[in-house]
Image (tube, rainbow, N blue to C red; front, side, top):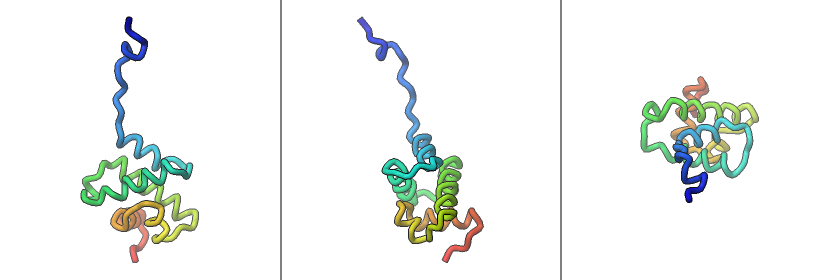
Length: 97
């Protein structure tokens, strides 16, 4: 006899969507920190080659951190790589020191 779980088609898990949702979230926590670290580790890919939704999520999160008074150094401490922070700041129209 099949269980309900066996009959239901497996839902496709999109790790990129989970990453973006975590970055768009306004809640701080371990999930957000892990998402920042994951996004920060994607520097082996040039910024324009990252999915546009991910770039948008990163910019949104970094903008939110800047609005709360965080410095560039604190953005890196939050889990982003310096390269990702620099590019997001450029996109947001901020100078990169």
